[in-house]
Length: 383
Ligand code: PLP
Image (cartoon, rainbow, N blue to C red; front, side):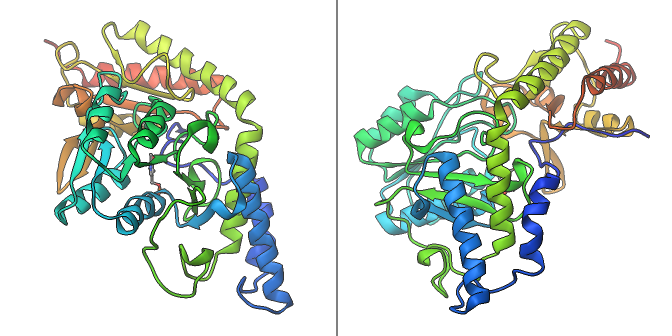
């Protein structure tokens, strides 16, 4: 069976060019970047080149780039490290954040740190008035993502960062989904911290970046050999850092043409689904969302079915997509993002997220349209 992968927001395949850049660092250039000898210096040079490349990709200074194990660690380091360094005055986040941010904030809350979760509107956009009100209560940190992983909505990060600065708080943004899709520049966004994850832009898994603006105090979460200027100790994985840097450079280099093409595929799929299923709900801010992502919900009142089985049924047709629910403690729970946007439980469960990537073609859209139609004919119960 021909399989079609439309789940690039979950992860992407490794770009062969990235693999080629990593290859020497997995074999011949094996030194420990902390060693003073020639082998160590070779590794160190490659690591620092990767750091400089990441910095230039997002408008930062190399000393502001810290390699992490990925988006989850970057988010944890930003949030926990800030609270540890600046004191537990309070943390603000938003209802549609990724679990890497939300669960970290809930962990702090359980430890007694005041946490405010500001709402999002029906399009998934953070309410600026609620942010301003929460900041007035006193907080050391606000963390709001750049673009949402489930519905693609792009947040007003710059406006939130400006409010944060005025209130004396620092601003972190999770840019895991936006990097390589829309411009990510730390000064234009006005943020103090920003997390990235390489496997979302055709880099390797297990590596990411936390940008920490000079002068921003963030305590390390681990202690040891002092690598990454003590911010993230442990022997550096040079091959992964090189892969991360090259993947980001390529993704940003090719972003314009790639997103124009994938946006075209996304728009055609959206139009076909809207045509086939009157009343289908498009999730996210249609005027301000990631170009390669489409999230649709089948209103339970119009299309009664076991919505949580949609993804499994599409999988049987050879299509890999994501759903609007997650298996938590053995039961299927609707996505917290869709719930925060006001979708009822049954409709949230009947959600499909299609996220396009480099290998997708026009023919894929036709195949997916046929598969969705077939699956819906099978699944929707007569009313
Ligand atoms: N933040 C967002 C918005 C994500 O989409 C993801 C991945 O799904 C993460 C964080 C976690 O990143 P990683 O898988 O690198 O830990």
